Length: 434
Image 1: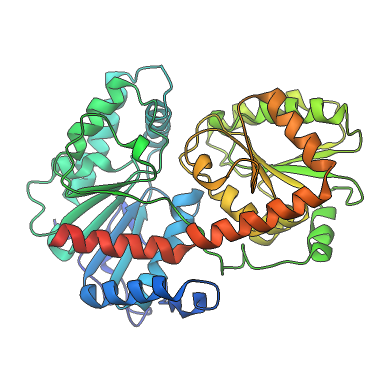
Image 2: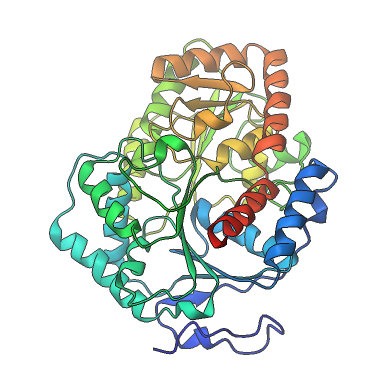
């Protein structure tokens, strides 16, 4: 089938052939120069980027993911693709379009299984997953691309149903905490990954056991430090914004910003706050997150959180109301940001909060341990009691909060800003094509 034929990048007013494709939609983005980072990044890193980009100039690179506007993957791509374009790479981003709800239900269950949920997936659900990927494969023409990045697990199987990938290099990017992946899920994904040319994992511990990938890169995600969500904000403005959500800006505030997901342990967040409040009576808790109306799991978690917070006036549950600058306001005005996950692939909100110079208390799991250096730029905790103890300690010690905040921002600048991710992916493309 003649699909994914390449439409000109410029001008944007020309119609894209992708408009005829039912399962994929092109996300139009303008090029952007990476030079904006020169004042805050090491010059050596930018020189590496220009060197690698020069060798890949004009290469056709396609990123495909499951959604254009929800979650960390979409946020990364929305900022990564313009930088690649600005470097002379012919990069494009396509996302799933008009997807049946049962597919997302199944892929959410697969995500949970990859993260260690013990429940096996029924064969009927595996069939839903593979049938969708089979249909998607019929719409892909790999000859149009030099590199194809498949983001996360939703579309991993598509390559298995292509008769040929031609000269294109296929790379899989995992964003999942797969340390505890169950054997059933691991075996399936080892089979799906066989025809891939390489894979990128956040941590070495995430790499599937017994995998024999042709090329492997360990590279954590990163945040866009220069977009509106992460630009500096004064404490005065931040307090003004969060005050509109009913927050008493004269009292201490701790906040968790996350999806309504079983791995975020939001009921545990409420319990930790209750224990801390017994010692710091004026402390407030904000839980900020978005979800879609058809996400039944998220609605169930939200119901659990509301039940746990019932009758507690100092708990503020804010759903689908906080835009990027409001998120920044909570990260800036809060005394502490929590990310009390029990599984976490990476957690962009950790680096975002640290970039705002706010100390983070996070679960001692997954990619959070790459970001929080315990007792230097935040705390890693293992349970509710430990979390409550660290909340009290930081609320009562302004100097430590400030020192941790500064150390956190420095750690993000050195490790988790987007140019580092750009460099890693450029180098990986050169490696797999050599």
